[in-house]
Image 1 (cartoon, rainbow, N blue to C red):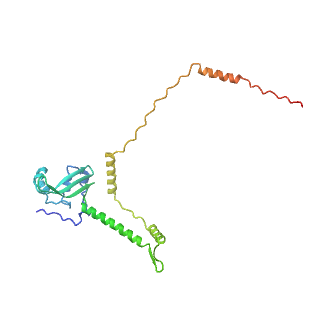
Image 2 (image 1 turned 120 degrees about the vertical axis):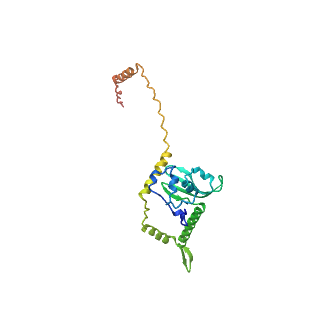
Image 3 (image 1 turned 90 degrees about the vertical axis):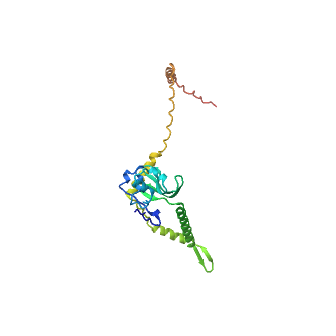
Length: 240
């Protein structure tokens, strides 16, 4: 008798992978990869398991009722999306959960309630931090009452920030290689636009010189050189 694998209260924090399958993962075998017994997201009481054990055509799932898994979206070789759904009739379905396989690692996609809950908790946390920081600037004096002291507190905060060492986020070799592969795949599918080539201007026509042009210019230069510069006339002194 088949029994379903117990999943923790928060399956969004889980991930599963089988490194043996990752190099050969493709559209034709991704459902077999997802239906392994070690996968905590796979319910072995589903109709897919019945079809596999009885060696039926996968199209028979449309004529069955109950829990099933279908391949919803494919973006080879990186991303696969599998949907868990309950089939009531061949046309009526109820989606239960979505799972995405990215670089061979299986995660459960968060539902709308989990996304809203996370965003609200993040907003409340930042609001509470801002209130606590603003209240640290408030000072009270018996004669003056309440006042704000930003200079001393700000100097203390800046000093504390300088003393803190920056945290180094660790990353594994597997993560770096997978990120590089994703970037190369996106660059191959969406290449950068090539700048337009400037149009070459037509060559300016070469003007032919007149036959007598160079000779005339040479003669004019010779005439200028042959001219003698006359000295200015001498001025005669006046007799008073």
